[in-house]
Length: 131
Image (cartoon, rainbow, N blue to C red; front, side):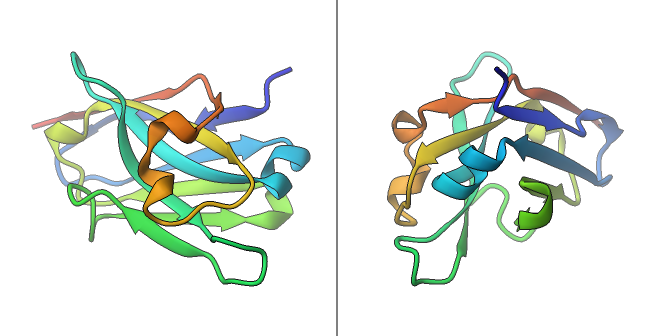
């Protein structure tokens, strides 16, 4: 059973925008922290962004990798059990396979950057940015 499904990737030019979606099962969406990672060609999977909270009583916060801060925005839509990654001003170095991942339960901003904590991954969606 597929529980995380990414979509929205494509081939674009420098400066263009894309919106990635990660649709989760309701159970996963309600019980997990969801984040975005990417794997550039020839490199390891790296943190991109996460929307998280350390407990049920605290509001969600967004955390970004320095390389995307100010250009990417992560958001969540509860009605659709989906998180999004809005990517603006794309650069060739953003070329990668983008993955959505899930951590069981809550997560602090710092911990959520660690890919080793993510127990579930989607299949990925390719983003290619040409100059």
